[in-house]
Image (cartoon, rainbow, N blue to C red; front, top):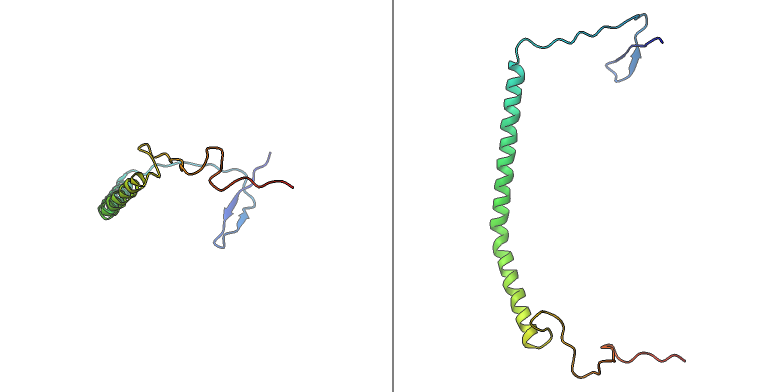
Length: 115
């Protein structure tokens, strides 16, 4: 089997390199890891900054939303009390049947008759 070698050109197209009989890859490690250490430290600092900003955003949202949610909770509790006082729902928040209709009749009126 013959292998082919292609290189990526400046225009983004792959081009075959003619006349190559074999290719050898020699993986070399850099002698000093200093450039990568600086990059890793910068990434760590960036991630910490993003995490801190996200936490600050969540705290600000919670501080803003708490009064709104407490007011909504108070109003829903008042509405539930009003429904209980009007005997529309019972203590378990289940609807109470209207006493002015027989049990067999639908709350929407009697069933239509077929002709």
